[in-house]
Length: 202
Image (cartoon, rainbow, N blue to C red):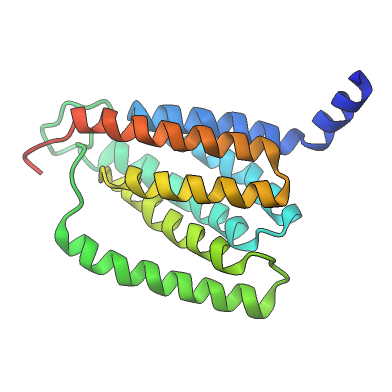
């Protein structure tokens, strides 16, 4: 039993490390702590490998995007609110998503989804191209919204995390299944926590 466990841990070490860092990433996100971004960056680097090995090509590409958006979010949280009178730790206030952002964001997300479906169905051997593309397109939008501190990004994550957990059950990525179930719960807690800090001026 011990030998089996050791072998399993060694074979899944990258996924396990990614899952642990992923939990820290969500914890820091809820707390609006600047460590959200470096933690997210390293989580994404690890999951690039995990998703490549599992054939989740859209999710793999998403991790590359996460690396880039982590750098952007890191900078924006440090500098984006420097000229505003704000009280939160990251320097940028929590706010609701403006209507004009929603009007633009919905068709942009749909276009990303369509593009991903076309890529996965025509150029990869993905077994879940439609759902993989859906979670990826929504995740791209939600992560950008996190960088801007739009509170509604938590609502998107609740849906994405639940759907993703089901996909990872299908692929047998059990540490990641557990991670995304916890993600779902933490996304609910994140939404509740951010509501306390919601700036009525925005």
